[in-house]
Image (cartoon, rainbow, N blue to C red; front, side):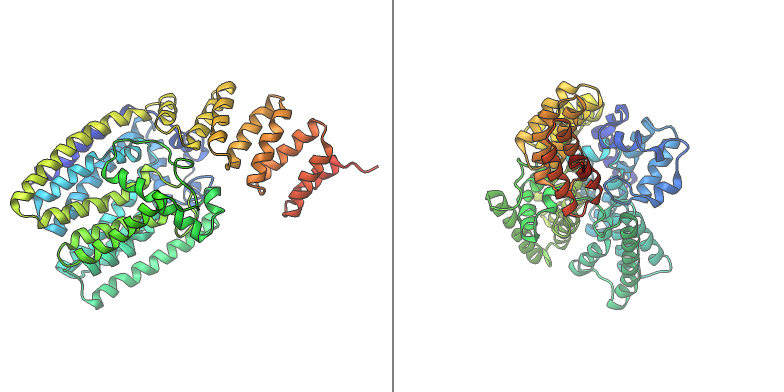
Length: 515
């Protein structure tokens, strides 16, 4: 492949995402990089490595350290320039991977440019914290390239260190990176060129041992195997409920991968269904899974790279799907970054086996789609320019998702606009009354304004949804005492003590003073 072809996807990536350098820090990036003291210069490097990435859990030491380096170098535009550089590098590696697997330079460039322009990647590139996804992608693609090279040239002295290094980069950048062994298993089983069994075991054994060791360390740091505080509504579901919910999300997952025209910063209930009963979306999701499994079996021999692409999509989707552990979100555009690599392999595999005439038609269509994707991405990037634009667009894009109004309400409260915050939080509860977090936020807002009589029913409803929410129970008890309802305050305290929250003994003594 000539060098200029390798860099075509980089040019497309700059055209699609280049405006990120004009953006500020909003939403999660602002929460982490502006409010977390560890990232304030001088950076607390030890804490970045040994403590969780996010208050709700997760452990991403490589991502944290890289963000710390960027903060030290000046932050601001440095964050966005780094994101853009990482994205360009991922695009180059996509080309290299497709070329290695298909040996077709034209297909490799077409797929690389399509990936570079894909609008669903805007959140990852524009949000700064999406660097976690890109670092993980570098590790996973790097591991796949190392494995492929071993199948061509044999296992050399550097193969195992490079493979282990790829796993360290992937797993310590984001949780999905732990799936590298599963991806390589698919690569070994589905592609015609494969390692001898002895060589495969020679590579797989230290890789699996390293993966287990890193997972144990992560469990120690985060305090749980899942490593993330799950969305309460997902945590309350059993296995069947989570499976049904995950299947219901799949149609939107597929739409965002193949037709990402409408994008939104938040996805969730009531727009997305949770648990039973089974609806049309759940049935469609089940059919998607069946179709993918059938395609893998049927394509295994005639279109192996496409079969590997479907395997890649499934393996990278599972960790965030709530099938194994309840996740912190139901769906997010950033979670499609790694599966979209699999989609590119599907396109590459199908394209590589087409006749030359069909390849030219598909190539022309891909160029047209790439141009449309580039424009859509370039228009989407400025949404992350500043907080006001971001939250305004968020609720405009997803007015039927309760969390969009919740986060806009929190932003309004932070800016001191209590009237707007009350309206936004109230709308969030109206859309989805099953989130104790939103009830607590609105109840606290009312309580601080001296409106405990109004706050009590709001907080009581939230506590009924999530009785273990200690802070909410405490503030409800305070408000009940303030409005003179000591009997109910005592009942709230006793209920807390009954579920092991002994700190409410003080509230009980205040509500039931001894003679």
